[in-house]
Amino acid sequence: MIWELINEYPAAVLAGEGDAYFAETATQRTEGRVVVRALPDAKSGVRTRDQINAVSEGRFAMASSFAGALADESPAFLLSSLPFITPSADRARALTAAAMPLYERLFAERRQKVLYVSPWPPTGLWSARAVSDTAALHALKVRTYDKASAEVFARAATVGCVISFSDLPPKLLSGEIDAVVSSGDGDAGRRLKTWLKHYAAIAYAIPVSFGTVSLDAWDKLDTRDRTLVEAAGRDTTERQWSALTGRVARNYAAFRADGVAVNEQPAASVMAALRAAATQTIADWRAGAGTEACQILDAHLAR
Image 1 (cartoon, helix red, strand yellow):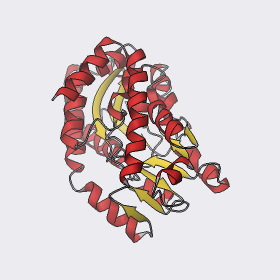
Image 2 (tube, helix red, strand yellow):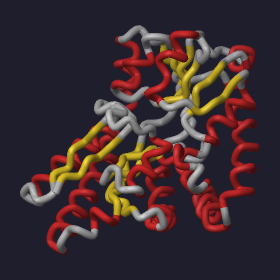
Image 3 (spheres, helix red, strand yellow):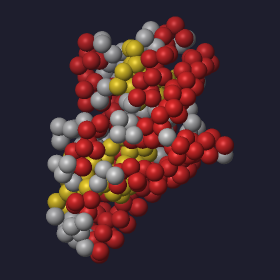
């Protein structure tokens, strides 16, 4: 049995590394009865926002999907990428654990099972020019990665719009976009630095991606292989959270080596403008997210 595992993002980002680890581990533990083949970098031709349907419809067995991009399916998928609510990896992991029953139910409703979670390093702001004050922030035309971040930057900048990572190059080349919300992890940063030479460590969020499998594919496994694949998923999740340790420092070193100016302490006025925009965005999210998702957020913020 062959499972293709699709992901829009490059192989050399943390989520892509998790996909490769899961593919190798699941394949080895089932002794090849389940062969998982990772397809990173949008090689499937499917963007993240469409991956959930591609798996539900049986076009691919698995997907590794950035949660925030699935907000059209449910606002609850935005939980991990809501602005400025996860100041550390520990807090991000605790929020993910608290929301997992909800996430699992949302995927199950779409005929999918969650096998593993991949966190991302903290999101920063890449730009063609330094964002040294609110005037510079307001002038930006920003690519964002989900509905919430689009709303934040639509309020704080000139433009805030959701664009798939794989669709970015021509928009950066033309100048239609001159800033990008992204961690810049691994190959993502190496691509962005071609056009954007400034990075502000705004610590916007520590979002997650989910590795899911269609229930149609899952139901074809016997009990032994289900147990082995689930264990591979748990090990992948542990590997991914552990891999965050030291990741930011290594990324910043790589940015600087590539000629990117890293601002680890953005101007207080810039952060205040972003937090003000975030407050309204979270209020808007609450209005449509549902009671359970709001209760999870409230419990997280009360800790």
